Length: 312
Image 1 (cartoon, rainbow, N blue to C red):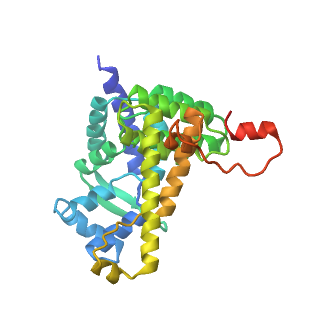
Image 2 (cartoon, rainbow, N blue to C red):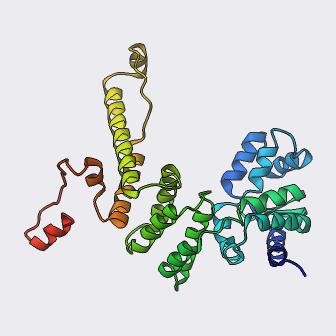
Image 3 (tube, one colour):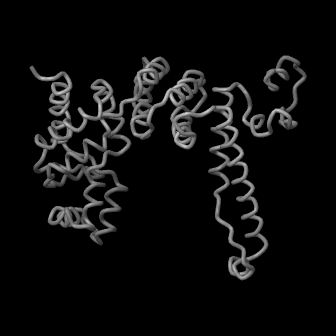
């Protein structure tokens, strides 16, 4: 009798092979990289060069790019991968089976509707399947939270697929601390919150924090680091306003560039995460319990609203 995992891999392999046989989408950015790297304006000639010697050192990265699923494809295939919920061993067997079924001429769907055939090798198809990360389905606790938040409407279903795809491709090893933090963030987020942006930020933060961490301390350290980066950005802009690059270079100034708006955007997401997970403003963490907290509360004559703004 076949093992359940083998049967699961066999069924999913047939579905994925059929998907590839219908045509593999190639996004505009990937096509542009391939054309520019090969120095060929004509997509057909560029792909013919790749097919002629796909194992060449300068071609292999471009072939891998050709068989790398983009964000839209990852969202589209997420439901079947989630339903399979397979482990890494089953994922390797799945890749082998799809490679055997789908290798050969594949239609590449180019931007603008053009279709070009490409002779896909088994290793190309196996690479595509492994880049889908079928063995990295998000933990059931996180899937349940996402399901509760995004169940029902078609738009919510699409967001659910996008969030699960983000989790699948984060490459995080899911520890209890990481699952707890992200589950709390997703559970407590409000309708006005940008869930994809918050989730993407949280995945990067969890990668920096490590598998075991104290949320309050980790958030405090990250906010302090972002504040230091903002000071560097301000110092850089001030220096640029006072002297040219050549003058600063002659004076021995070596300042790295920090893009202030990006840092501010990340700090805003961190502060929102602090409010959702810990129930406190991010600035309060950075200042510490014994330091005065300065907040702009605007103007209000309502005592209850003032207490709410003070988070009391």
